[in-house]
Image (cartoon, rainbow over all chains, first blue to last red):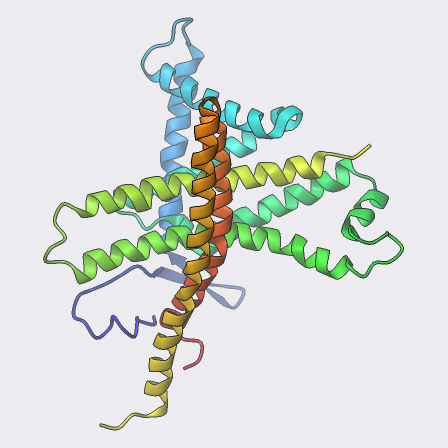
Length: 245
Length: 84
């Protein structure tokens, strides 16, 4: 594991890297079980238990909600409102996926508060999410638009018989999942690194005030980036679903 | 004090990392402009504060991306050390 060249000289243990916990061989490749896997598993377990409890509770839902039912209905209404606001008539088809994405990314981002290393601070996690968005965009594009229209779009500033701009548009299509995932990854990673630096280099004076930094880096930044990721995903998908005629 | 090649590369990587995060200037200016226009929009139409806020935050987050690329280059230079 490469240590920081600037930080390895100090005695404090500054740790924000992904560590391999155990490893095993599969088809001749060494595969590591890293901290990210464990943290994703913990987040998944929490969400799974929450959803099972919500399911059991809502089996016997009351007309006048109170307590836990209130919370669940509030969350669902909020997510429905967000998806409806930006996808319009395509909302009912995608509200489940976007809501799942939102809750998973939000819990992953704020899991730094609980002492976990946020799973979204690993490029593997966010790139997987970006790839899912990419596949959804292009599946819906081929489903809702004709081949001729897609070709016209790809050659867009010039007429379709002159495909000079085609490679440039192709690159901009491929850049979508990369920029989408790098944005989330870099934001969460920068928060993790900043907190590790505060705790590692200022150990003597880091008593209570890092809590304010946690509120900014974990809660605020995490929530904003979750919102942005879901918003951009919805915008791209809605754009791919619209056929122009 | 003798400095060998790998020390030199490490020192230059550190300088390069410092130069790479200068990319943060652009997003700072861009986010400031977005926030200023958002504030004036709220002043003109206080009823639409929620929508203006959402649009402003989305635009700011997109503008932030270029600065984050600079940050990533700095992190790669410091921690992955591709040159040494």
